[in-house]
Image (cartoon, rainbow, N blue to C red; front, top):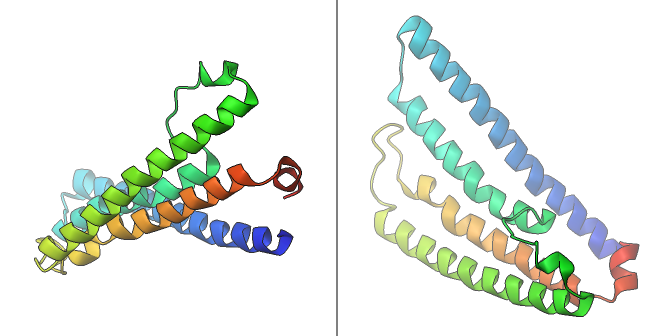
Length: 163
């Protein structure tokens, strides 16, 4: 079990760092675009579309990270006052609802890529499947993260703390 958790942490770090690199690239790219536009009157449609795509990528990529880190939106004022047994049940229900929503999102993402993926983008002039593909990919990754959290809920307390 320790080896599996070690592997999982390593995999999560790679996943997390891809998001960090994408976010850093987005920040640099947006700053560059703004400086070039306002100080030198230069603008590129390709860069603008790349920035929008990268923004969408970082947003969708972060779904699984938020699940693993427990940073998703939650109103917990009542939850915090409940007994641990009831919290566990609500956590399971919450994760199952999240999984259902994520699976619907993922299926619809695959459908959308199949429908609109053949179009060519206006700026970068690449097939839109490369831009829209982040939706189903991130949906699958998020589903894996939700399943990991569900497994953690069912682990005995001493195993969860040891990891």
